[in-house]
Image 1 (tube, rainbow, N blue to C red):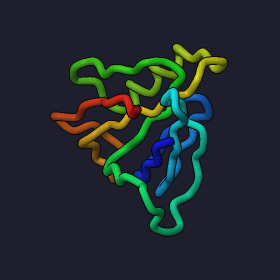
Image 2: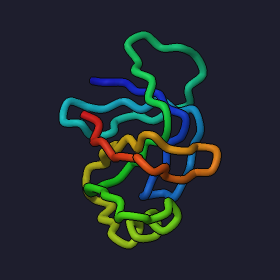
Image 3: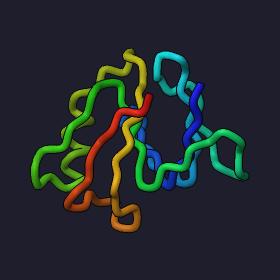
Length: 108
């Protein structure tokens, strides 16, 4: 199991944005737990920016804003697939927007 904490988590399945969250990944890399960060937890890696929860691989189109990205991604949902976590960094959490050099990394 791996544990990460981050500023924001957005779930494509529920269209929810949550702040200051901890997520745990199982042995296969699927998201097994998501809960609020209330205290420092041993063996937890801090990830600045945003983690996106999705049941399918995600990619940003050049010049795409975050709102358009979310609309496009939500149109591809297959809710019966395992949910994976994708770290978007750097990411402007105040404006909820990509920055020029944002990249998406699958967490394993």
